[in-house]
Image (cartoon, rainbow, N blue to C red):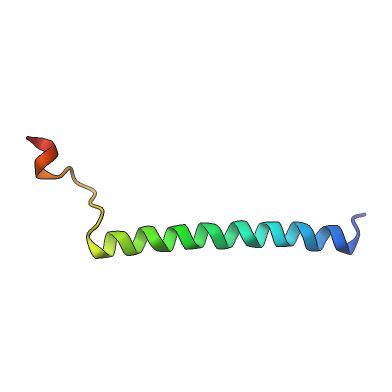
Length: 47
């Protein structure tokens, strides 16, 4: 069975990864909300 120290370390790694994913997702959502990104091709690319 794993000791508490190892479990705390693994939990810290998972928490750090979760925080990083949430931060990136929040930045992408904010970018879409601000209009920096679009799902459609822009008119300059289409021509």
